Amino acid sequence: MALFICQGCGAEHTSWEGKCPKCGTSETIRLAPNTDRMIDRVVKGKFKILKKLGQGGMGAVYLAEQVGIGHRVALKFLKSEFSTDPEIARRFLNEAKSYARVAHPNAVALHDFGQDDEGNLFIAMEYCEGVDLKKVIAEQGALPMVEAIEVVLQVADVLANAHDKGVVHRDLKPENIMIRRGMRGVHAKVLDFGIARLMDAGTKLTVAGAIAGTPRYMSPEQVEGREADHRADIYSLGIVLFETLTGRQPFDGQTIAEILRRQAIEPMPHLNEVAAELDYPELDSVIQKACAKKRDERWPDMLTFANALSQATPTAAHLGLSPLQKSGVSHKSMATPRPGVPNTTPASTSGVAIPGAAVDQSSTEQTVVKLGDSSNGLKAPVLPGSGTASTNSTQMEGQLRQASLGDLSAERATDVAARAADLSMSRPPEPVAPSSKTPIIAALVAVVVVLGGGVAWFATQKAPEPVKPPEPVAKVDPVKLPEPVKPPEPVKDPVPTQPAQEVTEAFVAGQFALGQSAFEVGNLDNAETFLSKVPDTSPLKPKADDLRAKIKTINETMAQADRNRANGHCELALPQYARVLGLNARFAPANEGAGRCRAANVSNQME
Image (cartoon, rainbow, N blue to C red; front, top):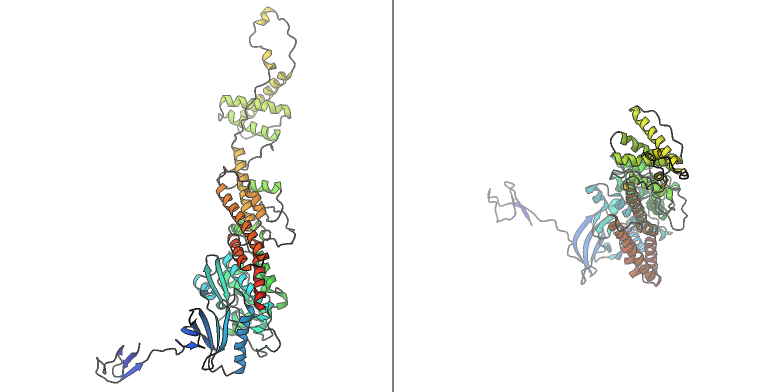
């Protein structure tokens, strides 16, 4: 819509009738809307331009759709004043070749390259919906750890593929990573290979001593104008990972010169220096090595970096621990074991299961004791059959003390005394340490034990041959010899039965915890073994059944996916591997199978 400004009074009007209604002046200034002449144009007879998406120093990007089928694409135009520059034209062509070489699901796909009717160079590429990572961090701050590492691993997969094809990005930054969240989690796309270098003879377009890249994510060798290889991308991706985890850039400044200086000489800050809650030494070590100032000290390639990052990623169980618990648990033991590498991790001494390590009885008992000490009211009980006569007698003496204080009934006190008498035959009486309490208690215990021992000794003696006693003696009622000959009645165990129940509940909880931990790190066989020990009567049974159902689905789906891949049907296998990873993202065979399928697809496309 046009805007009219009266030259007499300066009033603004959306329409003009020949003179200003306020002052009557007939002179006006007409401001026409700023229209883009590219809108609605059809490029090469097949791409109709819909709207402008962005503007850069050397060109602009438009949203267009393919005429007839409505397929949306992004058209990147080089400015007309640069289209006649041979060096810039070759650089633009180099970008198109980079897209064509990479050909990866997490990279933008190339559709076309050419010139329009006016001679402007353009690249037609995949239109990516979503939000760039820079905007995501600006709006919500640091990403959750699992999501941040997943994004970086997807980007690393793209760059590893690009490096294998001889392409170095050289301008990796959050603005060039597009994020889209779907039903299966976060999905990343790598954009803008504008200054990418093809590592072939004759394709070096950067002038010696010139700087190419973005200062905040530029490697030290780029800052110094030296040649940059694939390790420059490793450095930049390490900085992106740091910023995604913390929400802050490690090398920032007020001026470009200050940022470049810090990139060249200042060491990489540690994660916990910026965010105290990110106290993960293994993860920090991966970032430190990726961002080493000397490129020979960095990870040798992107695949090695990605493997190290995957190994250093904390499990969901470890992320749920308190800071005090984290300090007592070796995080390295929680990493997913590498296929084919023997497990040399020492046995856990903290009661936490080590995935991939053999489970011994002592570690299980430690876990039971820890669960017994928790706040749910369970005590650390003695396992059935593990008690000794000394331990039980100590319990009896304690109960005798309670009897003397009136805590036990007279009948129960008698039973306890009898039990104590039996125990006294199996061991010498232990001296009772003097106590600050009433001495009568100790005296009572000693008297009862001595009397009980005498009765028990007398009961074990062989009865004398019956002799006809004199008449006066027969009338003595208190002495009846036949009764002691009878075996004593079985004494009921005064120890409550609750500890045995507590042992069972604690053991079941321990088995479930071990099974859950094994499932989280992808060790499904061990997980199935532990979870199968949860009985039907346990309240943990539904959760155990749910995990076992997932294990069954994973095994069945993996079998189908492996068969499809072996028969050359990766288009069927890839969705099945994705389903498995949706149930357990740490299941290594699914990642390996999907990687082989993607490699096979790339090889077929190259052929």
